[in-house]
Amino acid sequence: MKIETSTVPDGCLSMYWLCQAGFAFKSSSGQTVYVDPYLSDVVEKVIGFKRMSLSPITPENVVADVVVCTHEHLDHLDVDALSIIARSSRKTHFVGPVECMKRFATMGIPNDRRHLLEEGETVEVGGCGITGVYADHGTLASDALGVVLDLGGVRVYHTGDTAYRPKEFGPAIAMRPHILLPCINGAFGNMDADEAAQLTSLVGPEVVLPTHFWMFVEQNGDPQRFLKLCSELAPSTKAILLTPGEEFLFRKSQ
Image (cartoon, rainbow, N blue to C red; front, side):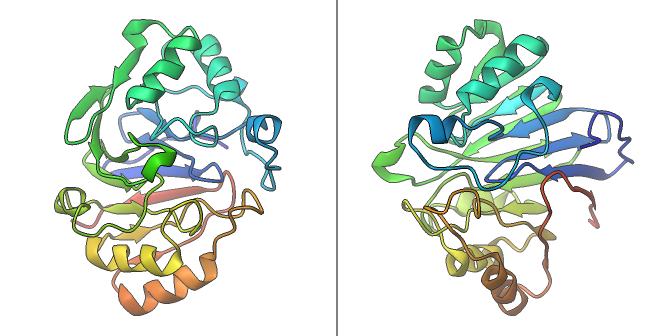
């Protein structure tokens, strides 16, 4: 990944898929934001789900202004990786809902670098606006959230882990995100490819990139079906897949 050395033109956003639900973003003014980076093997150590996609970056090489975690599950809040990031990049701030805040504290992250995210509220950190939006991950993570990021005027809607709840997604859709990142694995209460394509049609983003697939055999996901359905249900949206660590430069058209 060349995120540290890349230069992003005005009106653009550089983004990288980190596997699973993880993404890294760099704005035209140089802010670097990571969302749900799963970079270690902690899930296999704790739960037994073997990692099938290799991380494109090591925690030691992450230099971020902000790390956002949508909920406390280990493939979204990687306690092994985040502990390293917190020590090696002392400028990094960490944002998440209540249970994530508790995990941040146990990792020894100072209070002034921890920021509570709540549904309907916006946190401004490191030049990035982060709005907590509705997600339904059931009893698996009752305070799970989606997030809408505003990075240099480019709005990104990351659904986090959630079931398909079109009515409750209304406030996020109303923010008119340019980029949509929906989960598609269809397991553990999450949207599947069909539901994520329906959400894409409702949101009408310029670009959509599916997330949360092919990391663990226990979770699966069908990106090919998602791309096909998006071409039918949301033909004006560009649906793409990235390889791990591949850069995609988004230039907003409006």
